[in-house]
Length: 377
Image 1 (cartoon, rainbow, N blue to C red):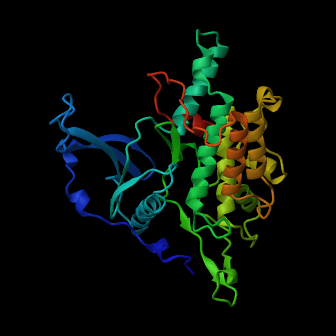
Image 2 (image 1 turned 60 degrees about the vertical axis):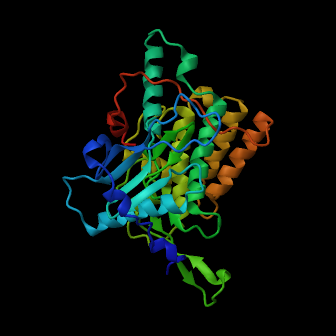
Image 3 (image 1 turned 180 degrees about the horizontal axis):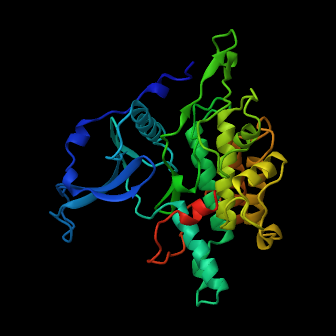
């Protein structure tokens, strides 16, 4: 049964959509089933009652931007699509207190209005870093210090990743209410120095069963044995195990699936490599065999041998995320707390700044997924 009534709720405000001027939308991105547009809202000036008004901006309109995300117009709208949009809006609204999850501004049927994030996603950074590494190896002139992230910045981004998942799961580590089910580098958008987790359309509510009591102690999380996603290298260990033994009736705690997958993203941020790409790229089938045997993606030498405290902390966090037995695997909040503790030790600050400045991308860099797809990640 449901853990909370809000798990099947929504934040519908269709009037906001009727006020949109759809003729001025600009398409900025699209995925398998959805499309995103940039929209602008003209905000009239507010009365300035101060004795010394801002002469430069006094009486001027301002422009507010946001993203309108909906189903591709070429797609038939199915009930399942409406449900996916509901979950996407629900979780952005329900987790609005998190600075690692985008803000929701409106939702109606198959339309969602959310934060405008023109700085791209995590895959854009990764692609740029990989292009820069190839240019450096080929001898092209390049200022390496401007093209790579400092170790401490990689640690901060690992905190963005772990904390976003922890915030999605909720405050109660023992009874998380939703799991994302599709964590990868494409799901992290960059805004004002922070990576934020989005795209909750494939998220699933976590259910509970009663153990004969009405109290919280009498509830037990329902386990899941399938997740309805195609298998690729970036999926969880449990799904790779299941692919080798489809009849296995064993179930898993769904939030621990997310923890494994967030480890994959942290590895990419640490190394600028996809999982099972080094020392040689493996196919999904080969990666499955490695994972089930208890082996993990290798680190390049400069990271494997590094004693930099930020690198050491991230590698320890990966050990936590990639714990073989899901029963022993820590929660996302435990991983987040560990990383924050290490950042405080490194900076000597009680409340260190978590914002990062990404290396400037080549303006000619195209936002394609060809390399990502080629690696079967």
